[in-house]
Image 1: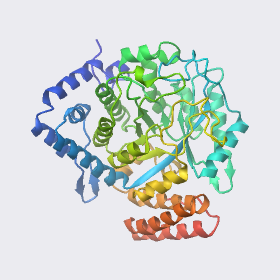
Image 2: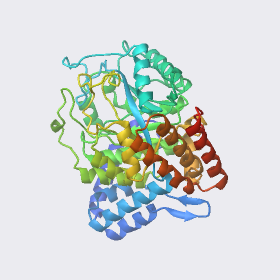
Image 3: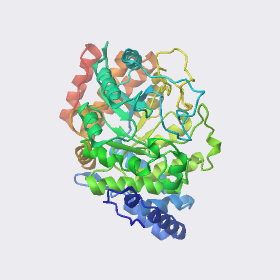
Image 4: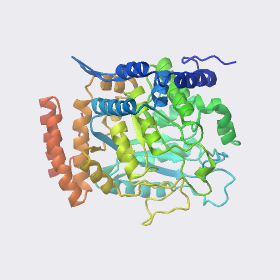
Length: 482
């Protein structure tokens, strides 16, 4: 029997079923031990020091206890601490991105995804490089600077060479003042050699959702295709890091398995990366199962009500305070609004989950991977964020300045991120307002920028940021960064 070992390279040892079950049993036994809960909450709280603000984070066991505790006063405190942590390390900045679906050809049999091989009702499509170019221009014309490319697993239709060529095409397109400055990649688990090629192509974050950490459920949900191999999939992040990619993004598809099991497994994966590589995940995503072409989410009996979903987000933020958190347009405006205060630092905007969807005037549904709940335009999302006192950020500076992996984490932990990310957010917001925004959004945005400039700690940085902002507004100068 596998023994729990966070430093192991074996999936069954760093995501250990017995350890998870023992953790959940311990959490059930102690969830009403309010003194213990209080001590964990106190440990999690941000502590101010001479060099800034610091958090210890929590173990999967401690965080699982908080998730199990349903005392109203303690749950309220969890939400308060999650918001304190979010403000301490990410401020009121929210990074924006869009997914770009390259191909829905897939050889896997995943039961929750309409791209599965046996689905004969969905239209199969793969973008040519010229079609990718048109999609990218459409995204640039909205104002996007950061993309996450998506493709099904199909070694014939979607070989790695196709992905690499597509990345090169995306980075090459300069349209008016637009440019895609960071391409994150969400493709199937692959080899160390292929991860090296992705690294050399200049990708940002490599993202791979686990879907479920429960091995038996995983194998049932992936009955056919290369994704059926639980160990190969679960150990992918170690191969990615061995290939030189130090920004990786985790996520589970909540609703497939018990949320408490997935929560513990997700945090164990983060602990494993920290223990073995010295840096945890760059991001954690929290998607929930949604309706799609031939997928009925009611088939899966582990759906999570909105209040518990918010609690999961808060507890993840408390457990891994320095990790970015992503919520997509799978979720409604109201759920996303609540989640922003509880720890989310990145959201997608104006997403289309169909292949070739951005060049079409009306939202196509024939090749969608899932239904989109938040269907607002990017301009509407940007304005909404600002009306709720969040700074929309299109910043990619850390990635392009080499501040990735442990270098980004150290910047975040010592509090210096405010002198980089805050001015960078304001400068990229100025680009958006000048080049793409509606009059209402423009007026709201420039008022916010004037107000938020005062929150940059260093006077010299503040003055340089102001000069760059004026240059962006009054000339074609773009892409300033700290």
